[in-house]
Image (cartoon, rainbow, N blue to C red; front, top):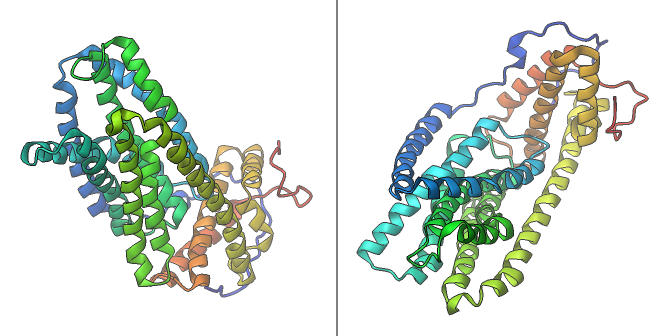
Length: 402
């Protein structure tokens, strides 16, 4: 990727108005089919799960389940959004991932497991250790594959894969917890004495000690898909998602099996010796991936500046997270909400250019590199007259600008 001439910004004055077309992000191909497929699946999933939840005929148990299941959702989602800082994914798409996990994946897994019980009469212990992991991770992972198939440009690497997989896992855990916690409140049939005490005790196990369980399992699929997206060879593009799915199933099966076999005596041991280390390892990997993403963007955008696509002095304000926040606060202080909106769009578009240019530098550029890159540079240059960064004397590492 190269520019036709060196790019140098002109003088800046806070914008009173900005052409609306500049603030509209380009539509991505594949939206119509993707939306149609996902919408139909979510409607069917909502119908199935609605019947499953209402069939209990216990409104109080359902209410308790919903309230308790919702408590860990916010903190877990916040953790994934914290990872997703350099190139924040579209909120509607993240909500769709959550909805897929909450409605489609739960419904598909429930139907397959009911059929397995009716046709094969698989014992509950083996259902939990084998059938559930295979079906549930397959149903959750399907969303990530649909995303890559229809919205290929959305996932740029491992971190994006972890974020979307995590959101699907959070949604799945939310609905599953409603079912389990409601059943614990009702009691009987192996669910204990019932009442709020039983539901709270189960909530401590599922919502306090292991709220990251389902997101953790599905994150392995996200890692596999993310590796495939940036892989240079066809072998790894095919193999990485399969390995990710296998890792998710093994982790999920080990967790369920520890509670199903040996009277649950291995549960605590598995939690301490496997689940906690796995969570810490994946969390550390995700933080490292975010750090690596920042270094990659600095390298990529610096090369873009060398080719005349952007101004090199802007790179720290586009990449460093404290500096990005400082520049948005500066824009708002100087030009109000409109200037802040322009700054945010300019930063986001530059980061997307950085991801695309990195693929060019690594030799894995997509076929439409020239077309997409030219469109991004054109939009950046259209936005640039309305963008004002803090004055030269302010260091880009300073994140407390007022």
